[in-house]
Image 1 (spheres, rainbow, N blue to C red):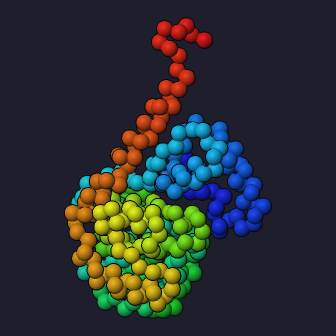
Image 2: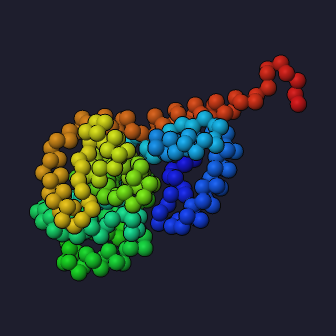
Image 3: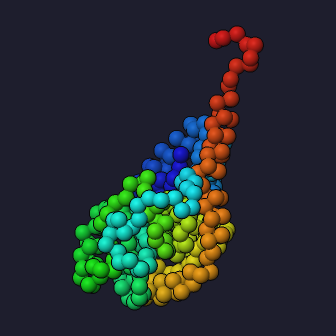
Length: 277
């Protein structure tokens, strides 16, 4: 089950010796596999490119189970003191240096979006530093962070926002080809998405026109991008969001997984009339 290209974790494996070690270990493991699931086509292509795997390879995305539109549950206002009537930009995920959240906060501050707030759901080592950044800029009533949401409530919480953010930059191969969990969680929440133009994310969002693209690389470009996308939200229709939610859901991926399992469990089965071993 491959959710990333393990040796290409730039935040962990910085030396060529480390990468060689993990690539050799990965190749040995892939050669022994009976079946391989990859989270997207790029990861599957990487496995095929190594040339050691003899097992069938299928793509099973990070999609979440289908949730009917309008299903009730907790909202972001249950987690944060967000004023009634305010519109909400949302980021869901771990508070890590590679998530680009410093630029998101500073860019939001510079964008000057009247009537909008920024909500960040998740925890991690940057929590205190990000809170300090918010307070230092006097954003305590506009930027909310520090709460972690259980998975069972995540779709309901995301559905109470107005725009989901995917501010990833191409730090390395894994980020360049990423199709993160939050992409599919936002889709299931029928939430329009503002994203960096990374190739596989772009492919998903342009399938039904449920995302807008912007440059999250600097504070200035983030501020300009946010002003642009909030002004263009009318381009994304409820019908497009619903169609995407019905397409990118676990129930469709489940069929692919079960077909792989069925195929593998038939391999080596004795003939019906064969005597027991």
